Image 1 (cartoon, rainbow, N blue to C red):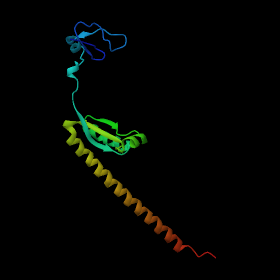
Image 2 (image 1 turned 120 degrees about the horizontal axis):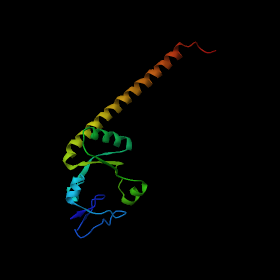
Image 3 (image 1 turned 120 degrees about the vertical axis):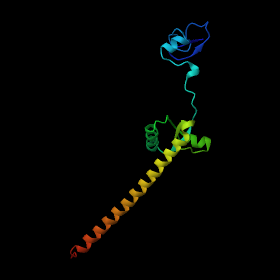
Image 4 (image 1 turned 90 degrees about the horizontal axis):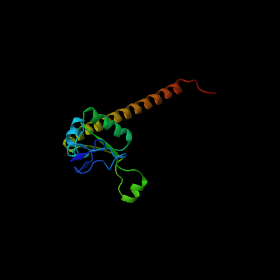
Amino acid sequence: MRYCARCGSEYQDSVVDCTDCPNHPPLVSAEEMRERGLPLPHELDQRRFVRAGIADDPVTAQVFADVLEEHRIPLIVRPGRSGVVDELTTGNLLPWWELLVPDTAQARAALLLEEVKVQSLASADEAGRAAEEEELEDEQSRQASMDSAPPAL
């Protein structure tokens, strides 16, 4: 078999040039591909990517992607829907972003994403409580300043 060093296409020995690439580069042998450090088509990555999690917005998707990349889990992030047309035509409203990982890393990735979700919910609750406390303090200080102000004539 002969191979294109540019696109990796595989051809029968009787073919001389790649018909898939512009300028039709000459084909090379398997040995030449190995010498150049190029994989043969059957040596390419055969992993199967599956959904590890979803995100409702691009910011959350980026946070999730950063966590998975930090743990060296290969990742594909893709939009699960593209707009109103999808909702109208399919009847389904899918999440904004899907995070796909190799099936061998799915359990670990899902666990990491769940931990991030729990942490973000806890952070949101803390922020809500802090905002409520700040609002209460502002209200109390306004009330105190009103009580201490001399009466208007």
